Length: 139
Length: 232
Length: 74
Image 1 (spheres, helix red, strand yellow):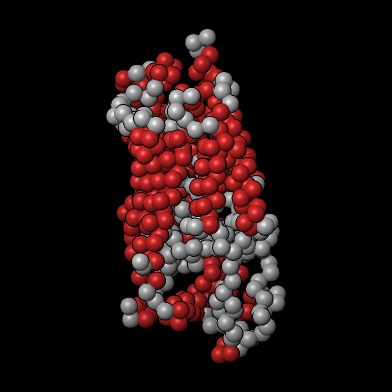
Image 2 (spheres, rainbow over the protein chains, first blue to last red):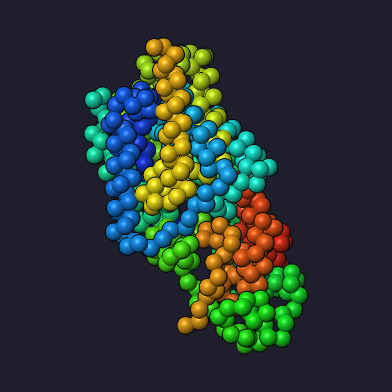
């Protein structure tokens, strides 16, 4: 198998695992998210925190303290996060979750996705005009 | 509990994907950046084509082109070589014809040595097609998980809580559009989403990610409480 | 073993920039690094494109010129 197709396979598999994990955990369920955000139920919050901790341990073991390219803290970090948090609460719209929702058959998520892409386009314009660093020259 | 994974299982699954992304695919896990590539599709495909073309070059050919460009941009190097003139640091004074090839090294992360074998080493940028497969994979993953728990239904419904708080039909769709739009703007301006900043960034203790995550969780909580309060 | 530049680069994108590693291969190419990456990185055409979320062509030089592959007869 050429190296070219290896990347396709790796990324396809990775995406599938991510979608499955997010869906199985309940990040695609508005009700579940809402209960987390209103502090009504701790399961999803523990899932998220647990994932961060476990991944942190995994990285610590694998990298033994060595670093990773740093995402810069920019003028856009906080305003952007505020906007994203608001959108997430209203539409259950975390980019990964929206795609998983479509897979689950929630066709209304197609609207969310369309709006997400429009928001990204507008966000890019704002970012460019304000000179906000994205952290890298590409994805 | 509606067929969802207990917290430790969900946590393990997500952590596995995050770490696996770095070890196997050698890139940090993140969705918003990949999704935003699809917004500038034509330009991205063009960049991909250029990338493929220069990948066919040999090292020597690439260096020749770079040296020609350097000459054009900066003029001929001073007698002692650019290395001596431009940098005050370790590189020895070199004549134009006798310069030494510096060893290609994995780029050090800021403030420390690079973690070789994971996403700190610069990997070749995946093509649009490969990234599109990633996104398609997420859809497939959602399908698989839904089917396995018996929850796959083709529906325009986003659940009873959504309907109760935000509305159904056209009104509900309008709120989905609003939320999606805000989220899209937000992830672009912040430079990451719940996966990129939240999962990948926080687990690596990146300051920017921790700030972003605390902020978006806070905002989500505030808005959710506001929504819930309207009915109380 | 010849040491690579010990000065930390000023541009936050160096770790992921497709062009940066290419400047490290030869001492004569380091002038780009010194002038742009470690200096006037806001003037870098690649950096400017990335601010708008636009894709950065792999052969775009910091001065806005594209690497001339025609020099090689390609």
